Amino acid sequence: MTVRRVFGVETEYGITCAAPPGGDPGTVVTADDAARYLFRKVVQWGRSSNVFLRNGARLYLDVGSHPEYATAECDDVHQLVVNDRAGEAILDEMVEDANQLLAAEGVPGTIHLFKNNVDSAGNSFGCHENYLVRRRRDFQAMGDAIVPFFITRQILTGAGHIRARAGGGATYAFSQRADQMWDAMSSATTRSRPIINTRDEPHGDADLYRRMHVIVGDSSVAETTTMLKVGMTDLLLGMLEDGVRVRDLALAEPMRAIREISHDTTGTVPVELATGRRMSALDIQEAFLTRVTAYLDSRGLTEGLTGVQRRVLELWERGLQALRDADPSLVDTELDWAIKARLLERYRSKHTLALDDPRVARLSLAYHDISPTRGLATTLARRGLMARITTDDEVAAAVSEPPPTTRAKLRGDFVARAQERRRDVTVDWVHLKINDAVQRTVVLKDPFAPVDERVDALMAALQA
Ligand SMILES: Nc1ncnc2c1ncn2[C@@H]1O[C@H](COP(=O)(O)OP(=O)(O)OP(=O)(O)O)[C@@H](O)[C@H]1O
Ligand SMILES: [Mg+2]
Image 1 (tube, protein in one colour):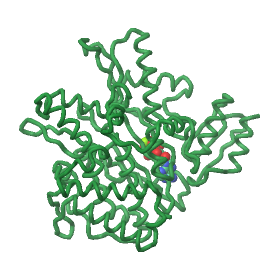
Image 2 (tube, helix red, strand yellow):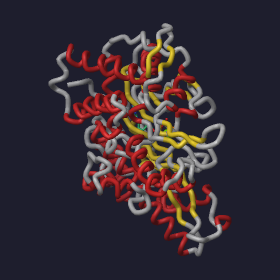
Image 3 (cartoon, protein in one colour):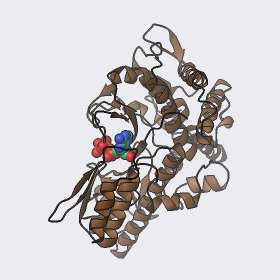
Image 4 (cartoon, rainbow, N blue to C red):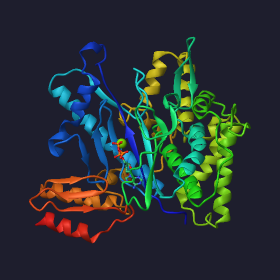
């Protein structure tokens, strides 16, 4: 068995209110107002636009009116994908409610939520991954080793992006987010936008753990893309935590490389390494994959890999093969950049449209619309054009049930009980508190622990 880890994904969504067909776009509500409609019910029951849910997740509205959903702590990649999809389901229900509210108040327009990373005004918003790692003195060294991995994995896990060309026209790029990143490592997220945020906030026992907070990924629509993004990172972290060194793949100019790699959809254009050597993103990803599989073999871990971990390694390999052979059809139902490229190409050739045609941009945006009716993902999946690894039943269950194997179980059950008993409680990733005269608080320092006697006592107190 590979080392057990908890991880969670935070997704900021783009929001817009679209005018009715033929309607005047000037009459619809702003994104800020749309977000307020979206959260109206949440604020009613939670008295805040920052709440923890009975499935252990956090739902909130940050500045800039991008609704954010942070999954509960998961310890399995499949579980994470299910919980990420549950977040979309929760938000979609909020969208439906908000649209009814608009209609009831006679406000024109329809609210849409997008799981993407740039809006039409050029604002960027993120999809952050969080991985628990054991605290060790060389966090910086581990970060340095993994930065070239994060810079190059976009050739597999990028969401695909229509990018305006300086002189006019447009080109297709791997990533929506690559052009928006400014630093390799830093402790600030908004000002400098680093690949890894080094702010030391472990959400757990600080003597034992650190949380690696990864800022750089594109939001993923296809479940298999989320699976690969988190699964490959988890396996590589396991290798680095076990002491395997990767020093030779550091990039000479990481922030230049991330853009060049995004813009070269062949994956083969070389970038310069710190050693002076030149390698393509494809070569670098291949080097990481080779080292991870060799590591797993050398430690006798290959046998014990879970089904989803095997699938991660297989898709990692096949995604690289697709680039090596210049044959996206090898992955065009599994990796967002390729699924979307195929969708756009078919549409363009049918209607003879340029890549920068507004109709193509609208189709590209609809790929990210989370609504099962207005968005394209559900239709693509039904037609066999987008793979799935979850079932609707699993996702529906994860809307109200926490992951059973981590600390999330304690939090989710506590929130559910408090809601049933109408008790006033305060919750965050590590604290559960009853707001009564006694003010009992339990601190959950172990993210791995789904059972805790102190929480049993707290639950009993809620029952009383
Ligand atoms: N100990 C942990 N290790 C790794 N991930 C964790 C740990 N505890 C919680 N998480 C995950 O980290 C994410 C935290 O989300 P949250 O949006 O609160 O992030 P933040 O970085 O603390 O805050 P903010 O977004 O407000 O800057 C969640 O997805 C959660 O499941
Ligand atoms: Mg967050």
